[in-house]
Length: 328
Ligand code: NAD
Ligand code: UDP
Ligand code: UDP
Image (cartoon, rainbow, N blue to C red; front, side):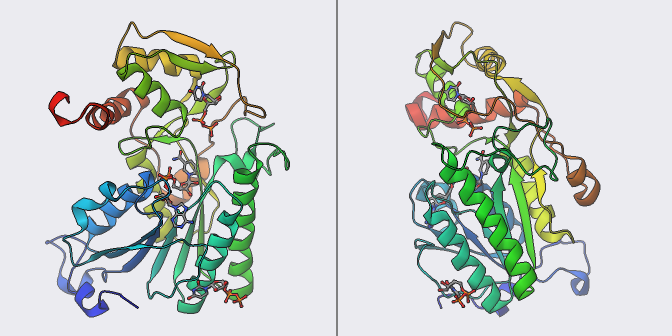
């Protein structure tokens, strides 16, 4: 394999200068699949900062080299262009599995990464999603809720793919004694988010910056809870390092209707931005809000950045990417 040697990696302490050498945590070799994407690249930043050796496996479907370009000169960082649908041989201590095309191959990729984790005895973290709750009949959603997912709807491929990924993860835990972690991620936003993939926060921000109307689907009364990406990354790392398998909801309980979100975007970018109503997609969940009691109690984690603080940080990044540096 093309790995940085573990002895080189272990020269880098991670706990900062004040901790006696013997007490420093051994630097780890960490694989981040989907590490060139939005969430993955922020996770990579923190892992590299901590002193770990990081390998990114990404096929650049939705991710961008730009997101990790600042690490390319670092000998403890490596990026491999690879589709996780194909098997791969690597030697690492931990696997954060984020790579996820919105297609049935999502399951195959997860199976391969579980097989890899089993062969090398690595700890495996799955980034699942709040979509496993479907259009929830329980509000807010607790991890013990089994969900309300349409198996044949337009959104099913993603939802059911993640549900199957959770099943496989638990099967490998029970059957192969794999150490696993499951995060159920709620709507997350921040710098480096895809500009044109149609998510509501990226749509509204790009529309307001481009002086286009904000497209509200349906009556705009459906709710979501928006988490800033740095909070999510802290949650993922606490989960990986902690003792508990999960699943854990990782999200910000602050709940907004889409009309309220549009108002926050207007206040942040352009008070004159117009709103335009469009028909909603089928099976759109009416409400979504995480109950994060379990993560608070067992991981000591909770989000710190409210929407009105996080949004401006994303706007700065979007301005640069849409208009170029000179106008930013
Ligand atoms: P993203 O699209 O920015 O990142 C996914 C990355 O995976 C991209 O870099 C993409 O190129 C890569 N990828 C996709 N298919 C691949 C394949 N077959 N092989 C290798 N690489 C592949 O999305 P994100 O928002 O950063 O999401 C990361 C993870 O978190 C995903 O698993 C997603 O389902 C989960 N999640 C995200 C959110 C959110 O709000 N952002 C919410 C719930 C769950
Ligand atoms: N796999 C991989 N890298 C590895 C080990 C396994 O990509 O280092 C893939 C392997 O090709 C298989 C999947 O992971 O498709 C599941 O592997 P496992 O050994 O669990 O199942 P098996 O091969 O016994 O069906
Ligand atoms: N939405 C909207 N305008 C847009 C994009 C999305 O009103 O331009 C709505 C969408 O109908 C949904 C909510 O915003 O009710 C969140 O959509 P998104 O795709 O961001 O996330 P998800 O539905 O996966 O939670």
